[in-house]
Length: 278
Ligand code: 13P
Image (cartoon, rainbow, N blue to C red; front, side, top):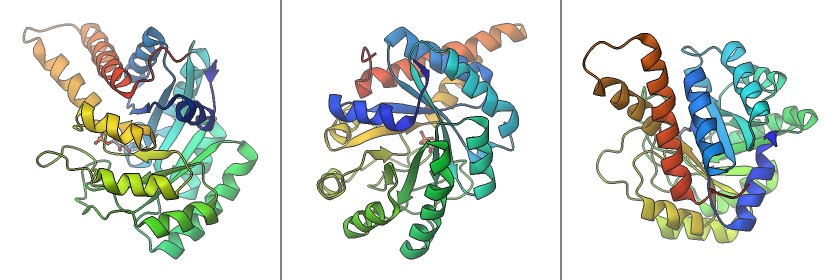
């Protein structure tokens, strides 16, 4: 087991009709905590870091650590580069050994998104890694700096995009948003169902933090196979660390971060139904 390609994880999820969490990590403790959760629940796992987060966690440092931790895991773990924006960073992630990359061209007009995504698919081929792309616009932004309006994925465009780019997984916009939802998330499940009927690819739901278990399950029924979770882990860590008011030594905080991550990842694995699948 250990380090695997993301495509295989998603194919098995399709056969078993469950979802797999892609958990964002920012440091070694989160990597350890996420893998511990997956090992305890015998679940496949995806760990990921987004390009906008590299100013905090440089890719040449955190990348090899993610890959090495995945190699040592006793469950299948894919290491994914989330929201890749530049060819240079995507190539660096592949050189380090990431088994999956996302190119996010969703802010470009369709034709340009297709053209740029195809270039990334060609770049990735010799590495044998998985490619995820996005069509339509998920709300908010990965690091909270931009408040992008949700723009629902157009079904015909999604069909054309999948056919022309030959990507392995497709992130779609159905009312989901990154970060903290303003009010209760209102996912357009009928729209998801219609996309699923027309597009024969594993679908990806970004903005997993704050969606309720019932909606997650509905999304999984309608073809969502990868679910991205970032903010919920970071918030759980802050909550855990702030819980203890008296001074505690640094290594207690270190353990808190691992524990909080494990707790949050286990919580989501159980909802997504990927537990006891390996
Ligand atoms: P959240 O921060 O809302 O969980 O979104 C994560 C995500 O989609 C990363 O790409």
